[in-house]
Length: 481
Image (cartoon, rainbow, N blue to C red; front, side, top):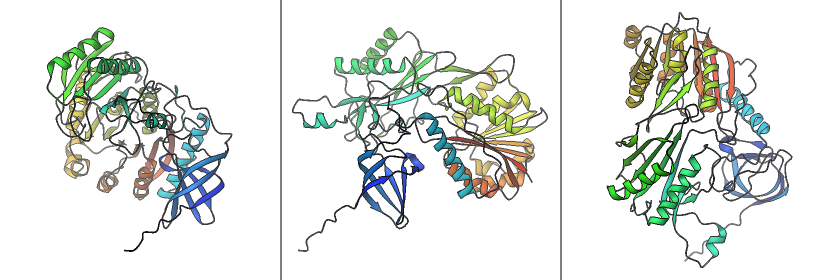
């Protein structure tokens, strides 16, 4: 029998980290090519300027991948992480980098993607718009409730029995392991208090949590929404079994402890996954929605109803700035017909409606279109039409004939960007301006390369929606040649 030979991993000593790269990794440039450096779970993270020892984990034709095993010299760009869970939970991966430097890296990412992938003529890219605040900025968090607790190295070595139940976030790369969270800096109060109260109730009453391998147990997820302007709070529990006694006890406990909860809901999900867009949401107490307000420049602010399944920008304060940029780039005078593609619940469409003749919002998810129509009605806005359908199928010559050809198009697609068929239809429709809002500048750059056939980029504004992460939003305006 032939003996299997184990190759000793390649190691590089005293290597300086050059810059950050896509997906929060860092990059080292060598004579032999590029090395992408991963932040290992539980580590302090690597930052540009660090001098480290690397262990190569993978060698590809065009690049290598590595993890840092030892830090010899810390970068001057570092900051002290403020969260005890940093490096393990997988969120806020850039806490160890000073915020102004985070902004510099994000701005450079926009420049690199638009120039190297898009390869189109660009104006001067405006300085990135910083977020304020940089902590407690999210209005929605979803916590997994699972029997499958992530154990620290100390806990692994102990002989003491450890409760395997946990309410928190999945550890990166492990669908079955959940890190119990004591304090999260992403969502304002009462988010942390509610999560801890649910955990205490679970432990005190012997409630079972869902086992992601065996598909047994009761409580699956805890979803908390908070409204920045109205301070309304929504809590939605997802359970795997129909057990009214268990449910009513926990729900009553939450309402007693947190009278500020204005919407309390549950979802009975017996599937083997936690996705709930196809499940019924049952309102147990309060209203089946919360409300968020946004100043759109009128006499009264816009009011948006946000349900358990509704999409709403998770950083409401920075979303307001993002929408103002999009509206400014649109250059509306009150005479334009506007198309808002991937409209979601109609937030951008309603935000610009006051300055347009008519706004046509198009969205794939029918439930979101229903929300958009309700939001238009709530705000007394009558110059909008919302249509549900697949974008690449719905934007036809017949559609343009029925709804009128757009003077301005605002598009805010998902991370995958626009389908090429949609991009080609926009070239055919030939609006005067296209405002492209993106959460993925790589796919945005790809689409700009196609739109370059008929348009020139005349404005670029990066916006930081998610501090302490590598994610960046970007708004581009294109003018017809």
